[in-house]
Length: 267
Image (cartoon, rainbow, N blue to C red; front, side, top):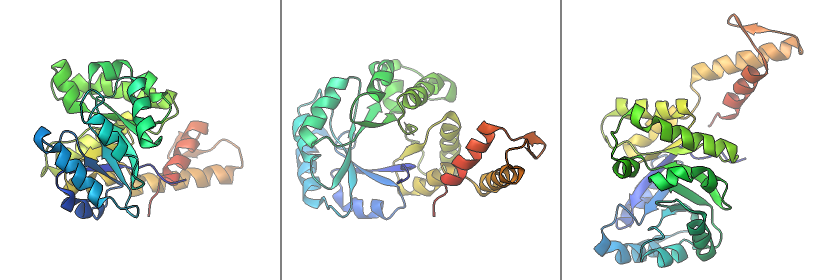
């Protein structure tokens, strides 16, 4: 099974010359953005520019404009291009918009960007909607919609709702929002590790410098892998009998977590 992306790196749709650098950054997925990163007056030119550089040997995610905009239809049709591996739907809040998108783009997987009160309210239904492959947390837009602060406590409940909705719908762990600090490695690391501790499986990135930090945060550390190997080895040697590692009983959930960590290793 192909591992789910840990990092998604945005590239502005009106700067297609940056796609090659993004693909070389180590990001697990690259998102070409036709929405927030492009001024309204430049959107048509950006769509044409992206259409001219799409390459089936380098699959990308395409963030289109929302279903309530005049750009949606043509953006969705561009998403049918074979080089588009998945489509990010902004302001996702209703199954109908997902169905409209998939009808136009050839039933591509949809990353549902939850960034409004309505989106959070309907997150569970969106997670169960046919074609939705992953939920994504649009933290900055949600802060604006709810007029709340950018801090752990204010956004905690909404992050947890996305994690729960994803698990109940049997989707991969959701994707956390961006860190706006470009040069603060400690903050990027802390926010990525916080997201992982809450049950997220990936994070959006807005600069290539963020990518290796995010990838590391969403990957098992050497200490975690060492612990996992010891747990699996001890359980195997015990042949089903009770066993302890580091003074703690290894029961079925502990063994399952150890195996999950080992399965998450990447070369």
